[in-house]
Image (cartoon, rainbow, N blue to C red; front, top):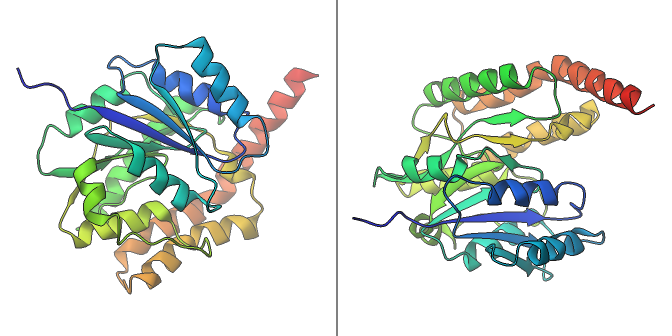
Length: 273
């Protein structure tokens, strides 16, 4: 019998003391165990390191790895450091507020059964929004529609993605470092994979929970976040109209989602009174 490919889970973290415990515990609570769970601490000034160390002590047999990336501040160098140190056949990349569904590793392995698949991404369930399961169904439907709209370009989602170690090695030296922090790092990876002819798949079953805290941004901040798409395309001299579709969806949905988020936060605050 051919052994299953091993899956490393890389989690870049900066001042994530409030979310990293749930993130790591969900990565541990899998129907198929991950090869390793790598938390890469990027100069955190809070208790992120202490939380991870406590988890290592509480679960001494678990493959929890704590690394520090202190050379550069930023998500991309921290992500790269983690991916470079990962030893699995498949490299998962999630955020420090991601909470993986228990079958995530199993579904990642299933997605990579196809040898043509170099990377894969999936939908999210916003755990701090109302109508969570309905929101997950809507998120999945929108992402599947985007695959049709964007045609040849399939886009990774940084909170829920995985790529073969060989694919990472193929694009490692070309992926943009973005020292000015203006790009969408996951879209940048998608473009580099596309340019190498490496296929990106989408799996509706590869689900992770994540926070909707991005909606706490004010309108100017949120618009600047969405415009990272445009800046990433410009960096790569891509003029495709269809690739602007995710921007249109995010901007048009913002007012309603913002209102839902604020209502949920008000309810939580009232419950604590």
